[in-house]
Amino acid sequence: MKDKTGLGLGYRMLWRLEYAGLTVFGPAQVTTQGDPKSRLRLERAQRVKAAHEQQGTTPPQEVLDVIARDGGPEPFHVRNRAR
Image (cartoon, rainbow, N blue to C red; front, side, top):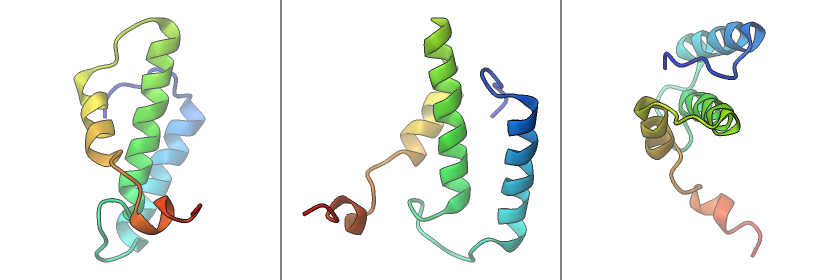
């Protein structure tokens, strides 16, 4: 994601380091909901979207696509934990 709105330099550097670490040392095969890299992308996209909303601008379509793709419903065991 190229948009850096609302993301400080420190956050971006740590995000890249964590993402690279997960690429090398992360789990082999998981579903989209359980994938730590997907969760990182989703968190970053949500931060960018929140910053755009605070500034009164529209986030790029790329950000909205990441949220739509990776921000699906929670896994079944998480959704039903409160019951």
